[in-house]
Length: 106
Image (cartoon, rainbow, N blue to C red; front, side, top):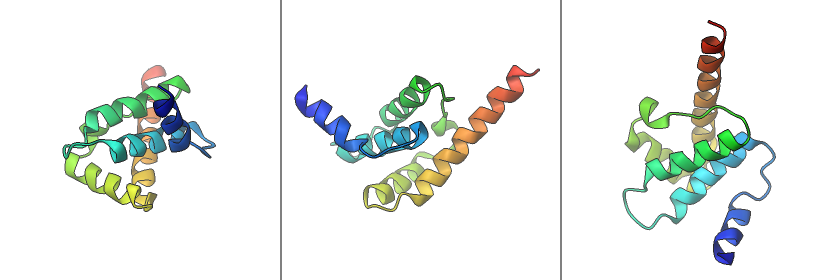
């Protein structure tokens, strides 16, 4: 358990906004995943858990992005090139918030 909590603290250290924390947790889980399929569903579950925990809307990534594009972005992010993944995920977060906002006001 201590190894897991140490990993969680180091993977999310320095995150100032819950959305960035969620993205970094998403990338960290992908990075340590031992299998080639990267278990995108589990990473997405963690992403959405962190978002919901901080009262932000969930992001249905696999509905909007194909799995191969997402893996490419995750690979780039694990090599320190997070820009494209951050832009994409934050864009999807804004889309989700907009959809929920429109739904709430109908």
